[in-house]
Length: 208
Image (cartoon, rainbow, N blue to C red; front, side, top):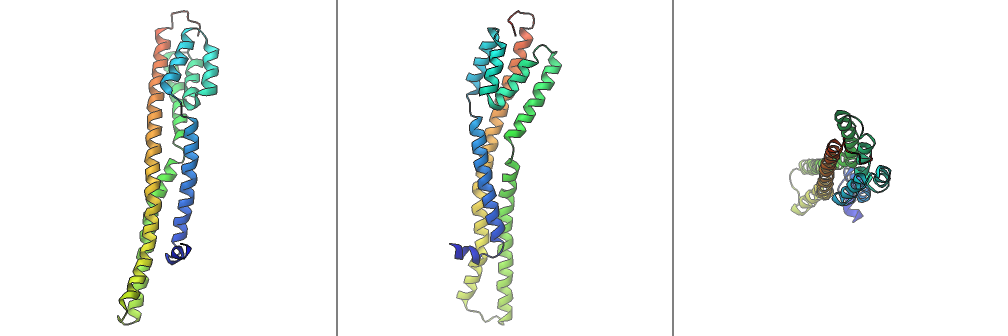
């Protein structure tokens, strides 16, 4: 295997480096998003129930300890519940945007790797083909077909390597992107519902 790697030329090394970075980013995102994996609907129902019972401190504690990004957004909303609606929306929107950015962290890196590795592979193939045809010219065109075929498949190794890195990288990129979008939508809906709850109950003594 390593022999094939070396035959691909020097551009195999940046492709290999991209593969290592891609694996590291994928594992890191899996770990981070796993920590964020909660049943948002059930969690929010629990928080609403605590708030309706007047247990604001308990709701804040649950948000901070068990809610991850979603809990941090709710906790800010709860802490600012006595402010006017415009201020609440501004604060919740700001912390929500910050949490979404954390969820999206490193996704751009995956996208870059997924886009440049096929280009690196194509560049390696083009340079390899150029070398092959230069060799043909030097030999006056009298080249054995098996020798020519060997030079071509060696040139194509970089394209194969680039695609082998790019395809799974882009699959994971879109997978993570979909998960982040789903979390962001649920987070936005829950935050809006929380603000509406405070607005509907602002004149009722429910203790929050």
